[in-house]
Length: 508
Image (cartoon, rainbow, N blue to C red):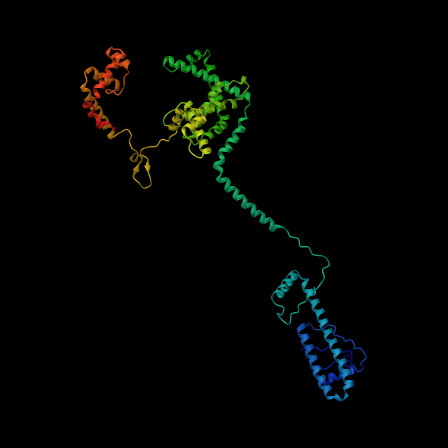
């Protein structure tokens, strides 16, 4: 129901009947504003008005205005004769009606704002209000005619509000990234663990090398020298007697008592163990450079360890050299000997193995620089070795394979099935045998001495050719005599009737 405000005059006359006729209301309103120049009177509102929706208030005010305007137009038409005074009163009436509408609208807005501010003061209501306001603005401006949308802020903030983030979300994000990187690093380290284990052992060993001083190393080497000297004495006695040596005989041969002998042997064993342990990283470091040459790493380590002990026997601290530096030569020498003796099926000397290794290295360098495999002459000129040595190295560098090795995939063939046997000459051996038989048949035309001299000179019997001096000694003749007999025999064989028997062998 629309609320029509009451003026002061109506309030003084008592309560107004809300069911009064429109004509009576109109007449009472016109009588209030009889003077055209007087200002409209202030309207009084109830102290505690009812809280209604602004849309309903506006609708009621507009409907009342339309009713009054329609009645006023009817009244003006009925009293057209009094148009001058009526038009002035009607204009004042319309002005007062507009003032009434504005006053009601502003008052209701103030009440609505006050109510909104009270609701906003509740915990969490401001955030909910803004969310609803943003949703209404984003969706459509006309969702409901009964909802008032304010463009002016309800209350100006006294101070600027600063939003401070705790940073926990960023910390959690950084922790997740760090955990991912950590897992990736752990996987990578696990994959490379076997590859880097060798290097870690070596680096750790180099630190342990400095555990003993040079003086201690020299003392260990002296203990090894004494023990090796005693062992050589024992071996010499066993070689002479052919029997195992007892401690008493061993001590007498060394000019010491049995107790001292036992102490020296124990001390030598201790020094040997300490030298082997402290030089183990150096041995591994040097053995790593000789991987992939056909010898097991354990065999190389064992050979290098024997090189350490041999170097300890030769070491002399008076020369001013460190023990670890001195034994490098002996370790490398022991490794080269092991490679020379066991890297191939056939054994080679250390010198020949070194020569072959240098020639192979030169061939690789020439192949890289020339872009092709070098010739033997080029390799010999580059290295300075003779051509025969280069060819020998090339033959020695060939790999050895088994004749029973399978060939191809899915084929029941072996290497011996496709490689020809050069030991069997085939038709050539038969032809050579026929030629030999033919020559022996032709020699029947000569006398026995000429036949025997020709056979010795050209090796028809055993394949070995004899010289004139050797044949002369066999027949007790001079070289000149043997030469004349040989020349006469060949002249007889060149006759046409005899030479015709050898025509079939000319193409051999």
